[in-house]
Length: 142
Image 1 (cartoon, rainbow, N blue to C red):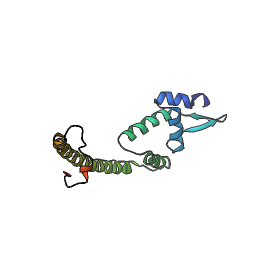
Image 2: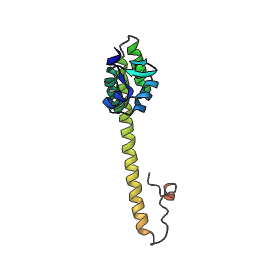
Image 3: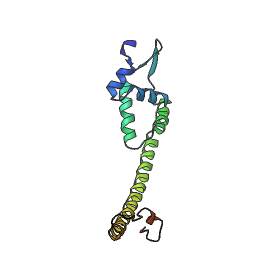
């Protein structure tokens, strides 16, 4: 079995991450098939795929702590699929809220820029237009 185990550098290279990332994932409890051989970490080949899963899940919004809990459930024999689906739905809802907030922020910024353009054009060359200060004044176009 030892011949089939990978060294940490091999895992990192195959997974396209740094050795530090592999160590970090191990510390966070994300990697299960870690063995000690002669005082050195050795990993099953499945760890490479696990790292790919972690990276893909993180890319769509799952946190490493959430993934660690999911993997712990799986390791204890529980099927976490329903929980994963509910988490994903909650993330989508949060993302929709954030998009709405960003649209509102964009509209506000556009109004501020329009106001600043006018103020800047009215300001004599070489003098301060006090654009930032106008954010707190009555000229605030929010």
